[in-house]
Length: 470
Image 1 (tube, rainbow, N blue to C red):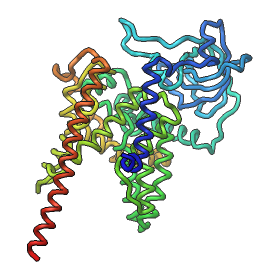
Image 2 (image 1 turned 90 degrees about the horizontal axis):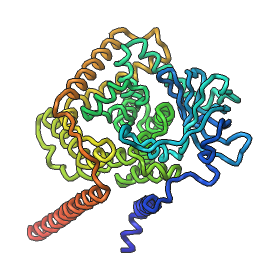
Image 3 (image 1 turned 90 degrees about the vertical axis):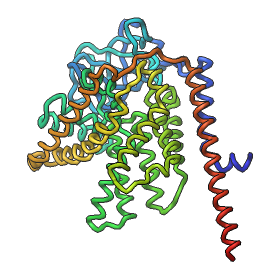
């Protein structure tokens, strides 16, 4: 027992930490506003809040929204985070800016008969318990701009110019879909496209994940190898694009998880080391939860890590299933098995959070998902070219991307229009989800043990055969 714990110390620590968070949540002690959280000022006539912009401001419907952390003025003892909504567009506002906002505080809302979205639960996973509404431009004062050389501002400028380039080159809906696929900009997706992606079961293509990071690393390493750069040096150089891309996309749990796994993989490969495949995932989970323990209770964290863990657990069990001479058959098998494993791992969470299960998503893994990979590569490469030198981008590349985005969007719309695309259900109780995952992991444990014993038995039989031949 002690040997097992020592060999898996990292996994034991991370799992124990998660269990402690879940226990506090079950007792109603976490997450909740502190004694001097700014949420205590809800109900005041007007509040002045002074602090720093924490994320990239999103401008939508002539309004600007961002996350802010700071102190109330003049009651500086009250501090914390709040979601600020400006009733006007603020084009010059950037992450890292120190600002003063004056407006009205309100509490986050629970779901109701007319609203399915749990606003209170969602923002609590970001340490946010209040909303601040600023109605007039006079209520916003920028005290100090962030440094133009800071990573946050440089990545924000790149993101803004990247999005502006594609909005000039493509129709509005197609530009937003492409920016969502390449940069994970879900907040600017039109409501109709967002609903179509959910119904078609492809909403994950507008979430930055391991696919994005692996494509960036693969392209970067291949390009450097073509320039005769040694492989180890190429791996070290690719660390910088991963960090910059993560900052440009944002700090959501799926982004941090994918970036952390990519960085760990690059570092271990550059150092010539070999680590267990679960360690990058455990390191990413531990890093996120040390910074923000509340993230464990959010759908974003659970779906991202659940899908990745499902792939790591299920795919090794199907090693012999890929055999086949024809590449297209192998590709179809891999796509189908990967889609099935992800659905097996996260379907209770999908039903619990979204109250629906997409049946069209199984077909989308053979159509829309491969197209999104092509768009990720071409869109990000050409878009970066457009940011650096807009006039030098060849027109034929833009036309290829325009056609690919149009085909992808039409596929999503057609799949979402099918009558059987989505099955609406009631959210299952938490104990049903627990029983399902307990039963699933029990089966996987038995299969894994039998596979190990089978390998040991085969090695013993091979050894006996060699002894008999001697």
